[in-house]
Each structure stands twice: as C-alpha cells, then as structure tokens.
Figure (cartoon, rainbow, N blue to C red):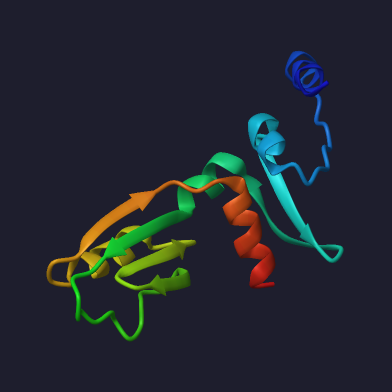
Length: 126
C-alpha cells in the first residue's frame, strides 16, 4: 500500500497527508514533514533539510578528562556514560564537534540521525 500511495503522489503531483507513528515508513516516502505534539505543530519542513541540520556527535575521552561546562548553542541533548558522551545537535554541529575535538586525546565522530531521533528530540523539548 505504501508503494501505491507514493506512486500516486509522484505520478499525479498530488499532495497526500499521511499520518503515521511508523516513522521509518514516513521517512521512506515523505518529502516534507510536520511533527504534531498534543494538537500543536512543533516542527515542519523539508525532511532532507531537517535531517541535514541534526547530527549525533559521539566522543570518547581519556580517563580523567573533563568535559566543557557548557556546550555551544544547539547541543540539545548531552548524555555521558563512563568515557563516552553522546550529543544530539539540532544546529551548530560542526562547532560542537570542534569543541569536542579540543579535549586532549578525545576521539570524535559525527553521525546522521533518523526521523525518529528528530521526533523524539522535538517532542521532548516542546
């Protein structure tokens, strides 16, 4: 059914409102998305733009290394377990990664996020 809906939308240049909690399906077929929480639109836009804006940054620090007291703007979620810190950034991801790289001996990687990651982050802060 999902393939048929996508084919109809593509062949007729028709906008289709598709509401689902199956975010992996939405991610496969949607060009633009809106996230609604308690009846209120809390985020909307081009899916590719939203996914490009968000990044997950993971850093591993040497034993005894300290983390910045404050991360740059856009570090929405910071979780530390042992030597591993995971940051979900909604903007300024490169600046946040550079701040992490400034920690002596830190290993830093940046990863794309899924629509589910974006949804959970947006709903958590609204």
